[in-house]
Image 1: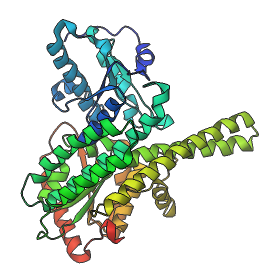
Image 2 (image 1 turned 30 degrees about the vertical axis):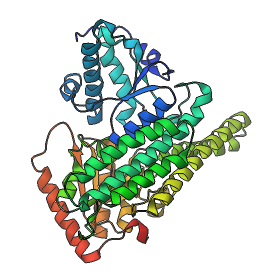
Image 3 (image 1 turned 180 degrees about the horizontal axis):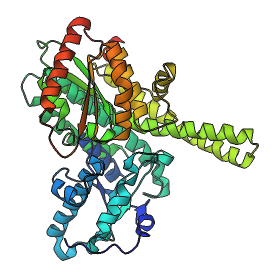
Length: 454
């Protein structure tokens, strides 16, 4: 691809935003493999040609078109979209039409650099004359990742509900993987089983997601869990339980974190990663929280027009959060009758943890709110160690580290920071081995408390 000159910054508003993706190929970056595939399947059920792009194959392109000062996930996703489009041009030749594609790259407000990914990637795509007409579909935390504008208005509500449900089920499949693999009868059985289960659930969501037949979806999930339990070797004793928090992309993307969970398992641990649904719930909770603050402020100032607007926002975001937590509870209640999986954290409870000891505040925002409180909760739940995973120089995760390190020392719970960029740290494995030795010692002294025992 030959680069051209960027002509105007108007493209940042004209070609980044909410676009109807009907009759387009909707390109979804792969952050969480299972979650991405179930989400794409759900979209396909609603008539949207959604496709999960290969990931990490375009890292050379990602490095070439970034300076290295960007957040690591920006490098990865920039490489992913450029790699996909390069291969797509090779495959289609003259039939390649950039207007056939919408690239999905959401955003957040606040100080996190994630809010600038799609703007930067817009500039990169515009530097290629043949890619200028590819639009970037951007959902935002400002409205809790509402899907308005992506598809026909009458489908939006059902699509949002089915999409959230796919996120929760994907979380369960991930937790099933981490629950079974450390105890599998034969190496490799769990990975193969979960891969097959993911494809099965893709078909299930594509078929039953648009019908909102969530009971049928859960029936299939229960069958998968029963099959997965047969892989567990009951002769293998319990292992130290390790909780993982951090920046959502790097802690979830196995290439970005250099397959950290597998490394923890290699040295005798069982891991539980913070979920994707937790972040979705947090965005709804935070928007509800902001709406309450705005409501109280304008009520004191007797600005009744603004009061009505903030009251409407409160009702909308409360409805979103109520639905999400209700569905999530429904899934976990059914699953936990079959197998012992760790519960997800409720966002309101996490905020209470921060307030109780004045550790941090949701007023600041960012993933530090979830990571700090999540670490404290892991420690209280009897986890034998906690790992904080994040891109090198990530501000929220650096803040997390500064606050929780002395706290974990005081509580006597092993703690490890694992920052990542495109390089490989020579002392990484030694640090993980040392951490796991400490986790084993903690396990010998204190044992552990699993979700079903709380």
